[in-house]
Each structure stands twice: as structure tokens, then as C-alpha cells.
Amino acid sequence: MTMTRPQPAEFAQFYAGYISKVPDSGPAGLMKDQIAAFARLKALPEDKGNYAYADGKWTVKEVIGHLADAERVFSYRLTRIARGDQTPLAGFDENAWAKSAPHGRRKLADVVDEMMAIRRSTLALVGSLDETSIGNTGVANNNPVSARAICWILAGHTRHHLDILAERYGVEC
Image (cartoon, rainbow, N blue to C red):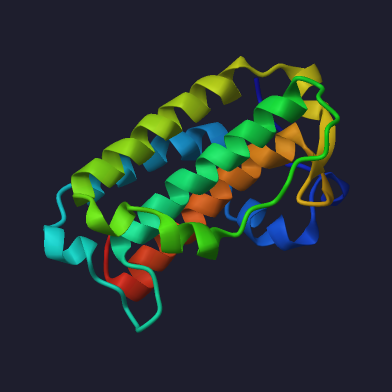
């Protein structure tokens, strides 16, 4: 199924930057390609996994851990909304989560493996959706959002952070 780009009414404006990072061909291909990008991160030396480009910024491991946490949240939202659940879904504070998450104390390869497993699960979910389910809408973090938009946000959010890893951390993936 070809998944068309979501219309602006399908998502909160602050997600527009993520959605713009996804090619017109749709999110599924990009999401698959990102698994290979994560696999390349496993080759980094452990000390690079502990690198942060400035004081107060996340380390490489913490960025990847954030992606794993966010992917779980967005996949959960996607499941609920695609299934027609109209219950408003809460937001989350990624900075508070990062402070309490164990990502920085884990081995880089383990954090990357976790992200890759979560992504494969997300791809299975995205692949199961049909035209009706991707058109379903709900409310997440006090904003209307469609299942289609969440798919695009997932791919674009990851692209955003992989770009930051390349530009600010010197980590090509």
C-alpha cells in the first residue's frame, strides 16, 4: 500500500519538520533503511557511545535510547488510533525519561539492538495497516493526529536524530 503524505490537519504543526524529512515514497522504505543505519552504529567504539557534543546534551547511547523510547510511545499511539480507539492519549516528557533511563549505563550494542528490535516491530505494525486504519484519527498529547501522520512522524523523528548524530556528534550512520 502506498501511504500518501498526511495533510496539515492530520497532525500538530510541531511535527511538520519531522514529516518533511520523509521522502514522497512514504515512511516504510525509510524506516527499513534506518535499520541498516542502526546496524552501522553497532560498530562504533564504546567510548564514542558515551560521547556528548556539549555539556548537558545526550550521549550517543542516550540519543539512541531516546529513539527507542519514542518509537514505543508512537507505536502505541499508532496501534490505538489505527484500531479506532478514541481515548485521548497522554504526552511524555522525553527529558525526564532520559534522566531516569539506563541507556548511558548499557553497552552501545545492546541499546542499538533494542532499537532495531523495536523498529522491526513497528514495521510489522505499519505493514499491517490498510487504507481505513491509516485514515483513523485520535488525540495524542492534546492534539488531533491520524494514524498516517504517526507513521510519517516515526520515520521523520528518527531521520532528525540520525542527522543530528552525523552533524553534531560526527557519527555517520
